[in-house]
Image 1 (cartoon, rainbow, N blue to C red):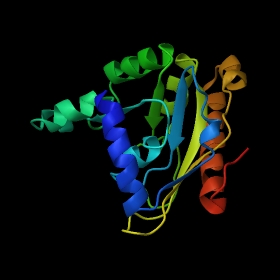
Image 2 (cartoon, rainbow, N blue to C red; image 1 turned 120 degrees about the vertical axis):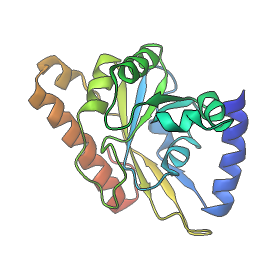
Image 3 (cartoon, one colour; image 1 turned 90 degrees about the horizontal axis):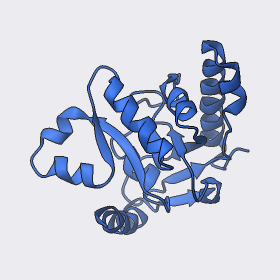
Image 4 (cartoon, rainbow, N blue to C red; image 1 turned 45 degrees about the vertical axis):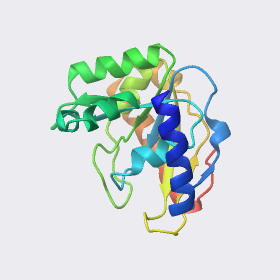
Length: 195
């Protein structure tokens, strides 16, 4: 309930302030486990990534945020769960995989940190998607968070990781990560969903 109310309010605010437009939203499966893999340039990216998605999106958030009175309860209520700084803990990975196995949606930034340009992705997102038997939807967040300037969230065609998972090698996981990051880069350039 809290999530739906917050999403509705933020959707209106982002449409007014950033003229947010979602392209390719139909590429997100209506059910089943999904990992939304996006570029990461701003602290606002988790909101932009999930505000137009018709399903609840779960995120990892820095553990310190959960210690802030009221704010910690709020972000937990809208689908965030804690991760220790300096690396993803086994507990956070287990939580993510459990959420995916339950048919939920996870929002993940494969680069692991904010970057101006799309950087190298880390294998963690692919590993969680494979273990959670999830489809990956690459997402490009295009634009700058400037008032009344257009922001676009571009959702690309789903990527099935089964061929990479069947190989089960570090190299195949790296190939899958490179594929996801190349789709994000392509959508950043074109502003259109990649197929």
